Amino acid sequence: MNTVEWIREIISRPEIAWKVEEYSALTDVIQQLEWVPVSEGLPKYTNDYNVVCVIGSMLGCFETVRTYRFEAIRGQQPCWIVPDKYDEIVKITHWRRLPQPPAKDGE
Image (tube, rainbow, N blue to C red):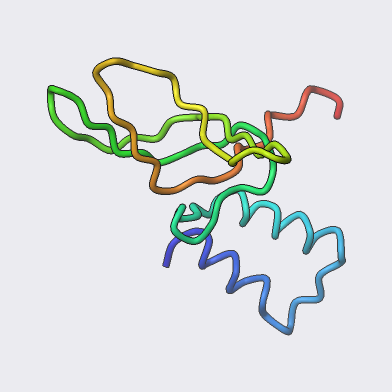
């Protein structure tokens, strides 16, 4: 069982009474942890996202995690903004939201 499945199982237990704020916070955490296959959909909003991508180059092929911008502008085709590198072919397979930055002291 992976972390996301474990959290889903815990929050679905009927014996645990969750406050709306707690439940909302946990579902936000789940959404940040889950990888969404691009075959199931793309982000709705322009933002930076972590992506799993397959990189092909003259040296071979490998899979890695990078951060790319997704732009969804009204009237234009939504697309990933991928830096143009002459020796790389990038295929994005999954995406997820970026995690929240650490809280500052005193917050």
